[in-house]
Length: 274
Image (cartoon, rainbow, N blue to C red; front, side, top):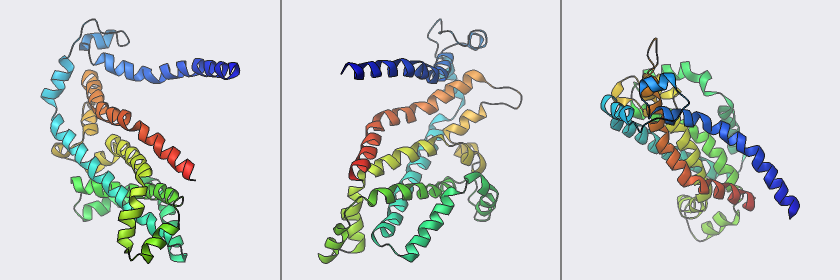
């Protein structure tokens, strides 16, 4: 018992400075959004001398935040929903109906998963242009559907822990293939489904590269793109930049705090079943 407490004490000493180093950039951003531009320029690391919300008022007056928030929310919700559904449905036949054809398909998906997104940008942009999907929210959702491969591998690993007798018994009882998946298999995937939703939501919401390349108009801009617009050609509007950064981070931070227990349940659930 004493040895265990000593190890925990040593671990706390090690983790405390690491935690402070990790938190410092967030501290720097948050405190500077509550200062005047002059204070930000002369005393960037000090606490604000007064509680100043002028930067937030300015952002809400100058930036179409509600529209950009709606764009980000729509893209994120629809894209993540499609990724989860496609990934789960693709994993089901691979796990419960193994065969040569399915193994070839799995290898093909694995090859696609290993190819970096950046290497496909030029042909992907040409394809999006041909189908007139540039500067369309649903066009960006189509891009994000490529994340279904990641969800597919998560689902496949979890499905392999489920008893193979489940679909066999349901088939004997006269249940269709669709009924087996939606009524029996998919409800059992709740832990890994929640985990996949959390990871993909954080990716889509914070993504900058795809919106920058495939969304051109200000009406379709996401919140992340609004942060980028605070950067001028020769200078950066730091108060505006940092205030927008905080606004973008707040929703995903709240989402992560509320859902972090589900991440642990998904990981632990998969480990116990495995």
